[in-house]
Length: 308
Image 1: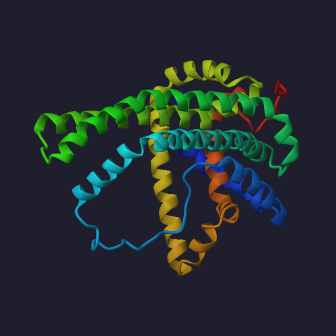
Image 2: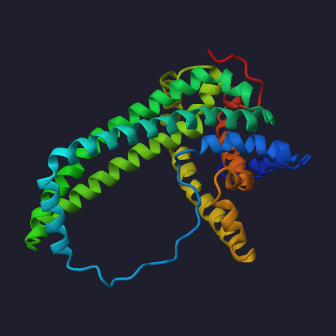
Image 3: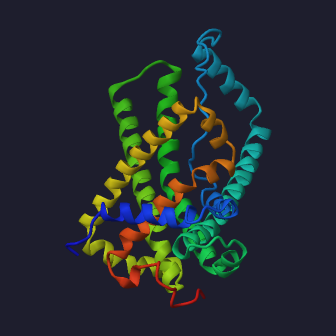
């Protein structure tokens, strides 16, 4: 695998963007692929209009007094606050699961658009339903595991911090414990973020090609990752460079258009359509990188096995 490159896929991905969006230019195709991309981005961080109002420090009152007042109120009304919190958590969890389910459908729909240079919506929604459901359950399980690991650390950190905050008695031991918990939570979050990144960029295309479930696709991808760990680390680092370059380009567009583009990109779906060249480039880039590991990983070839 000496010829694996993180720069060669750039030109190929840019050419793919031109083929899909500009040869020829078709506004209807933009909106159809934009819908798939919008689904694929549901629940994920995206650009929104900035809020430059930093607020004022006046009339904030004494922080400790406000905290004690809030603490007393919660303790006195715990009988109805606790059930309300549980209810809101269940609603938030259900809504988050719905977003993940729609997002998983969108991942395969967008990949199909990029791989085949088509703008189908209904057909891939139905055809990849089983694979998308497999991806959904994998992601949901991964999220629950992450929550079960990090939640105790966060709760323990809160229990350590509250007494020191209430009595204004910050000590070296307690602060070191909080720092350690913060670093541990951060490292765990990074690990789960890397798993998600590898799943979206490489495992999903393998599922698309083989028609296999998410866990089975991970079993195939894991030896490839282990044998070429250096190349994939370089890929992840180069992704940071790409994100920085794209961020600078978008910032320049905002400045040139006097933030008019900022307003349009803040609108759900419309913003996705406007950012479609960037979205397709990033999807195509990861696909072209994966294709370097052999013809069996090239999604631009006809799919040999239908999803099951």
